[in-house]
Length: 138
Image (cartoon, rainbow, N blue to C red; front, top):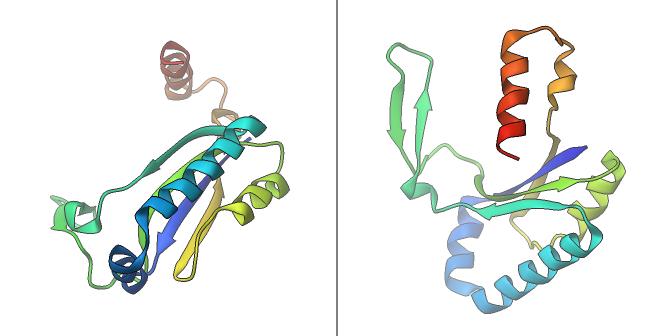
């Protein structure tokens, strides 16, 4: 099963990190972690995200949807990156999450990625199309 590890950082911690962290050391620690995930055969993908100031939010509470440029003053944390792992269990996902080289002011939210089979609609036209699209792109 696939799990997503979503890196969350408190805005104050992100600002401090930009000024105080040795980015060479941070990249080395993340590289070593990613290499360990690769060697264990659980790594599917990982990406870092650009600063929230480069992002925007589309809110569908009204029609038409409202677009708001980042950063967002009300945000308690910002998403800064993610990993997708293929593991055998929730416990294994937790094992790898605990090994991630993060520090104070950061957290990982770990969520199982739904599979098409989770929807229990084998005859649904859109699920069948999604299966075809995935097969064509893998």
